[in-house]
Length: 403
Ligand SMILES: *Cc1c(COP(=O)(O)O)cnc(C)c1O
Image (cartoon, rainbow, N blue to C red; front, side, top):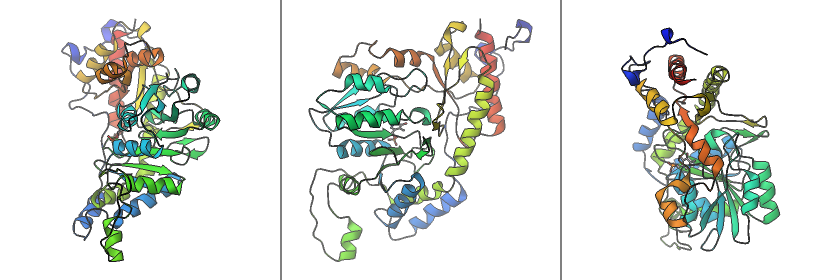
């Protein structure tokens, strides 16, 4: 699209009128009356935490993602910590992970006293590159911690193959990917340990919350202890058994998810199918326009994948633009489009620079992508008008800056 100067509307950034009157966020929860009813029922019941809703939610979740076991946690971050524990990570170990993620992914390795080692990403999907993983495997490597960036599953076949060759555990941070599929398999049933987050911007929310799924029963038991101070039984089991004795067998935490939260999660599961369908429709509408728009590169979907579209991150084709990402970001915000950036590569954060000595330039694919990335609003509650507003604002802003 090449607009002549006469047809260019003034950008809101330059004092023109914005495409929308109110800010459209990049992500937002949707809460139904049934969700509210489910929470109210728990508030009137005997169990606010560690009651029947916990296992009901876990069982329904496991069934939804096709896993044998699901263990709930008080946040996705707590679930990641538990997965790092479950993988047996400890001081002296290394886990290979991606720099293109939220910092909690890599932090979970450090919680266990182990070292996160970054491997650069694939230039198309921005997921961790299996060849880069292979280059970083050594005698200290114990786990691979992949992220399904934006809801597009990582290259799991190659990653699992590497893990098998080298005797490594695969943790998949699927915080973005509830409902995604990889080669016909549901995310949550593929890796040794799969982690989900129920933060309000994710596909399903419990306010705060998370889950680990696994096929291995003994691992699920260890995770249950880890979230409950390392104690072998919970309060409800002891009440049912009528005795007071318990044993703390390992150093755990209080990472339990309450019955209030689990009731909300259980109710939210009913909307997941419709939610995914809506996100896929929004992605289709975005891509249909952006495929033909100079100055912007829409997200790539590999043929073996059905993504869950937590995010819709576009990359700016900066060589065709007279502005950088910051200017385009601010121009879109001024149009009341709540764009965001996912992510500042983890090794660029001051804590990682100070602790591990990163200077920049270590992961050129991730660092280049970061300079180009903008996440467009993507959530299931978006109306057709919202989608149209995003497209109109993006074309307006790009039209201004395309050479
Ligand atoms: C949201 C998110 C987390 C953290 O989950 P919380 O539930 O907020 O603790 C971890 N990793 C990724 C990739 C995420 O998007």
